[in-house]
Amino acid sequence: MPSALSPAAALAVIDAIRQHFAQRLAQKLETPALTAELAKVLTLLENVDFTQPDAAHLRATRHPVITQLKSLAAAKMDDAILAACLPHLARLPWRYSYDARADHPGLETRMAWAELVGPIAPFKSQRVCLGLTAIGPHTLYPAHIHPAVETYLVLSGTARWAMNDLAQTHPPGTLILHPSNVVHVMQTDTEPLLAAYAWTGDVKTLSHYLERDG
Ligand SMILES: [Fe+2]
Image 1 (tube, rainbow, N blue to C red):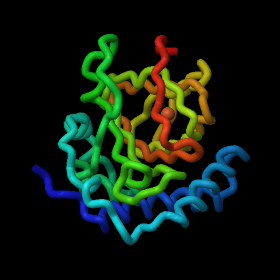
Image 2: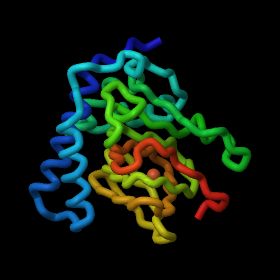
Image 3: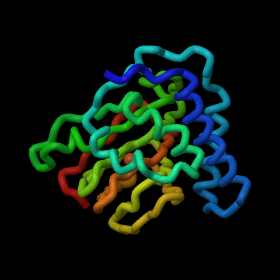
């Protein structure tokens, strides 16, 4: 059993994501909507108490998605966020919060997220979530919606991302904004996907899977 994630290791991942978001804002290259959302995420994170981690959410969960990420362990470490999180992949609090689906057998073992800031996370916030999403190769994250506004930063893995039936391939470094209650889908190819994510707005209502896969 891997040891628990240390608060310092969790904070290093959070800080690397915050610094990346701040750098992207400073570059002034993002759309107005992404610019506003990145600024909102950073402002909300300023109000999180990072001095009182909840140890219950720093325990390793042994989620099987870890085995989907083995090729990431050999990924280049020249990105500050990857450098902060790759050494701790097995210790992150990966979880998958939805029922298994008969039409997507094994999805609950091939996809998970490790929330580091949020209502159910080592660092508590009811207004912003920050964490990592992992999806194994050749996996469809089916069509879903949620009221929270969602920002993704692709860290590793080039996948197909679709929103409102518009599909695009996004390589590492891409920022993706999913507005509130907009249908979106991800489909990995040969590579696993590792991405940082942030939620703002209604961060307590979970995703709702649609009947179709968009
Ligand atoms: Fe989403």
